[in-house]
Image 1: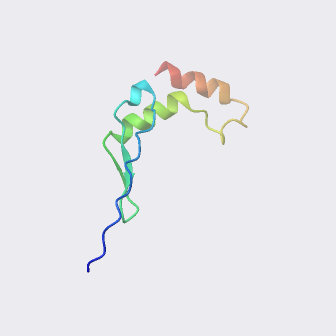
Image 2 (image 1 turned 60 degrees about the horizontal axis):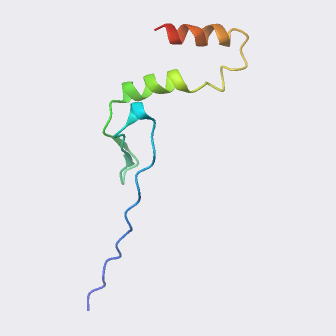
Image 3 (image 1 turned 30 degrees about the vertical axis):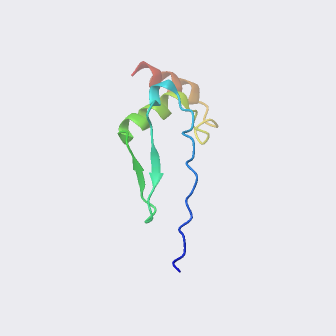
Length: 71
């Protein structure tokens, strides 16, 4: 007799920010990241909403952060 394939349960979609509604990211068998959204849009969103830990130690970080929001 042939072995039955195990079915993996469907995972629920995670909650995302309203600007990223419909975002779906997967990693294929070769380790490549596949996304249904433009990477430029994701980077722009992250620049606006996430603080950079490496730059936080700089004295002029607050000025740099203000400059990002003006764009």
